[in-house]
Image (cartoon, rainbow, N blue to C red):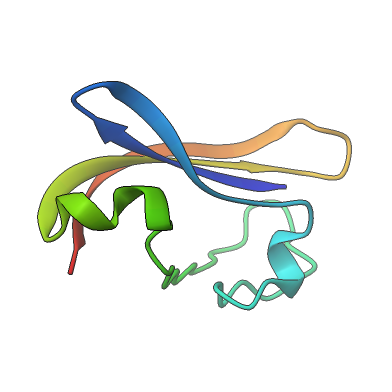
Amino acid sequence: MLTIYGILESGPAVFYTSADACNSDFTSLKCPLTKSSENMLEITLPVPKLHHQITPMNLDVLLYLQDTDGKNITCQRFPAKIQ
């Protein structure tokens, strides 16, 4: 599962969620992932309509990637830009 939150002044807002991060139209993840392997994930998302009135902007994004058992593979916070 892949879940992406945008950190807005009003708090976190879900920007994207997918039950299958490997078969998403918006990610480049190659599966299966193996332990101790190096992987790259590129994500390009449309901005939810709710947030169109606040573009363009810089914000932090939280990304949670979980395996099929619901265990966290990674949790990352990083800067992003809505254009």
